[in-house]
Image (spheres, rainbow, N blue to C red):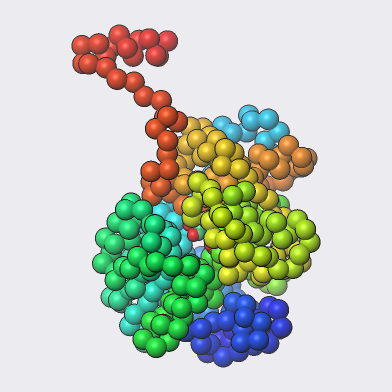
Length: 400
Ligand SMILES: Cc1ncc(COP(=O)(O)O)c(C=O)c1O
Ligand SMILES: [Zn+2]
């Protein structure tokens, strides 16, 4: 059985699936990095099998996957004409089974749950993680308990509720609910695979390995990812640390974490040189999926970024909205506002930094825009109206 470790006090602990936090520092525990011999099984089809040696699972059960991963790495050819735009690729995670990167984490955590004989899993989410966890529970024949915020929109309730979980809208502070879920989980045998669950984080590593292979067994120079609770960025960075440990790369990429200005507790702490963040009051942004004012993995993100010469930047809602439209109109990728932060962040950084012509920049597009349709202002979409008889004339005038 693997051990979990605290990156702050360096102590290791046996696995406690119901409360993976350091008893001394209170910070999330991560799976200890192993020294075992590892290789990519490129003869396999499923992403979790190809990269299985790097995951903390004794065996992979193919029946528990929904075919997540193996997402495209696409060149942003038509955006290259933007002012000072460097050579950029997107890792398009919106094409995962439930339309976000969360599936990469859910598949690993669910494999773990089944191997431990757990019958009920759960999560707390404002959107993407709710649907993802409920879908993987459905596939595995497990019960799931999905706790959402009181103000969660109908669109998001439906996107998770369709998988048949026990879905509860909970009144009260989200941070308190996060802690409470673990108490309830222990008492009722529910494995709450929340945002910084150690196995979920391990699953996010697979995105990093795929990027490495898709670039021809090379590391990109920069990786941009939106940051909320921190789990995703921690996983991505651990992937490249693994690759460095294996001697496959010499340098890990510069990681650029992007937050929305209206909820940027980590950017604030990082730019003032602090090692821990303080809760962000009155979060307000269109990027709802990343508006966690009290991110549980925040201090680990700050530590890892500092140790690996990373960056954290904040972008405004206006920059986010512009980037979301640009990605759709110029590249055919419809992402949610949280994902659009990465392009907004790159545009901002490109004005201040001179990237080298040979730099390979990867933007991780984390979630589909189809789940956040209600954030699209109708005024941002051009459309016309016509009667059948007047249609041709109308088209003539707009096509000209
Ligand atoms: C679309 C999207 N992008 C990014 C994130 C941020 O991931 P994390 O909370 O692991 O930092 C989330 C989290 O819910 C998300 O839904
Ligand atoms: Zn500790």
